[in-house]
Amino acid sequence: MKYNTQRDKLQMPEYGRGIQDMIAYAVTVEDREERQRCAESIFSIMINMQPQLREQPDYKHRIWDHIAYISGYKLDVDYPFEINRLGDDAPAPEPVKYPMKNIRQRQYGFLIEESLRQLVEMPEGEERDELLALTANQMKQSLFVWNRDAMDEEKVASDIYRYTKGQVELDLDNFHFAPVQALPRQDGGKKKKKK
Image 1: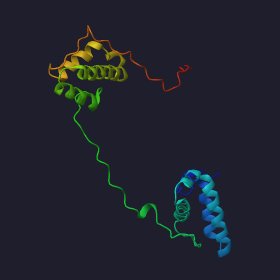
Image 2 (image 1 turned 60 degrees about the vertical axis):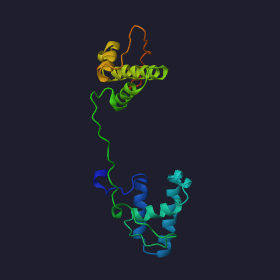
Image 3 (image 1 turned 180 degrees about the horizontal axis):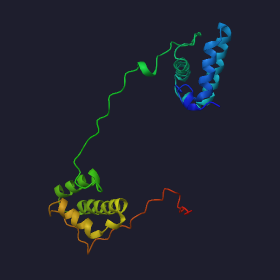
Image 4 (image 1 turned 120 degrees about the vertical axis):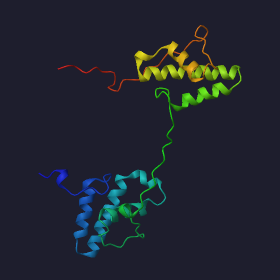
């Protein structure tokens, strides 16, 4: 028995070991006409394996590129298209810069802090009250998700006061928080049995 760790690395795992073995066999076929028929059969199988590729305008060209790539560009057949080299020859994309922002309390995140900054700049009125209500409810939800024991409506009110340097205040006597929604359990709601 041969383990996968002892076999050649899969060039394109989405096609699996069977396709890679078929292409490796096609490379060894000596008769050119037989090799061509073998490659076209592999092409048909690969199209059936990846039906979502049919939605792309150049899907046939891409499949032939994949066949050439999996063979290590050793398969000598009459390709219906000019083969584009994939993989190792292509330059690696530039890494995406992640915007690093200084967040004072990670449980709230950048967007909550940004909405608190906007609250300070807004004139008093209905729009500001709505934004304050949305922000306070999201802060309570974030505390619940982060640490259920730390979730406290008074903490939310004091954090709003502290973040805005006293310019925005949440009146707990007249404000009613929305009920916190618990996230579904990862294990499907089933408790694990102890052995």
